[in-house]
Length: 80
Image (cartoon, rainbow, N blue to C red; front, top):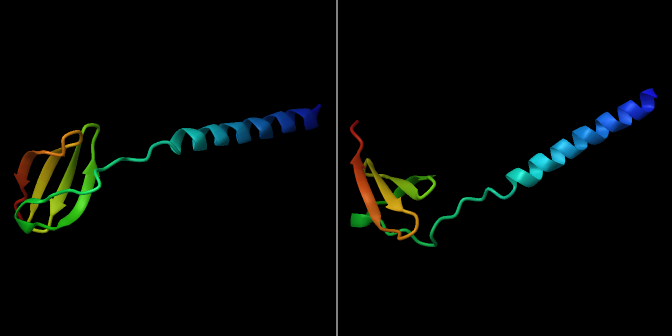
């Protein structure tokens, strides 16, 4: 009886682990092949939202782009 309970619990843990791996493996973010930054700015970091992405540039700006069109939505100057 104890062996059966142990086997069921081990199977449950393995099944839970497999479901978590399957669920999280399909979360690859998508970005366009090329991002055009204005005035020769260079990217330092990228953050992805649900329908936008933001690029932090080397000249202390955050540029927010539309994910569908690729057009710049907003520019935020970062003060030091």
